[in-house]
Image (cartoon, rainbow, N blue to C red; front, side, top):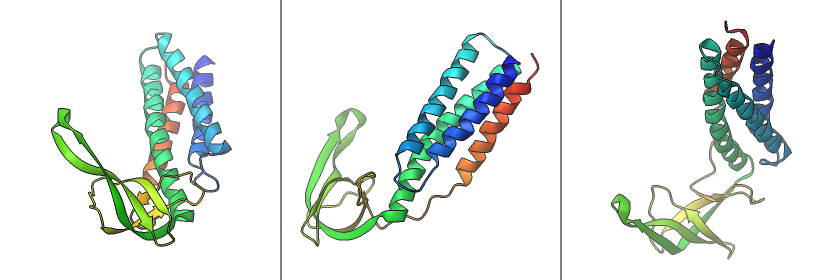
Length: 188
């Protein structure tokens, strides 16, 4: 009975949690995402408590699979949500780099490079501290940015992104559900 509670209950919490995290439309980072995060956190605490009781064998392996899958899915889900929000409501603007933020990391052997820029837009506004990623624009460079009019997602360089591919998330959700069921019905 206890295994069924942990396995099936954990699986149900995972599915509800991921529903909240992968609710990729609307206001983003809102109540559904907060509920999803809390439910996944509850699953993690419950799974850790189960493993701490010195369960071993198949049930412990199943619970380790559940914990691993929800960790990866939680991280992946937040990135997908940001990409979906920019796809749905992102505004693309052309601008000119008016300030470059140069940083260096001598401990890792990296010399000075541009890590963020301020971009003056055609409407007279300025997008501050836009992260550059692997590109390193110089002062005066013309580039394109995409920003969220509601300010939920950080402004990014480049055109509005495509909708995220949900294949990986779907596969991980299936793995998570399978591990939860395996945990519930694993032999002692």
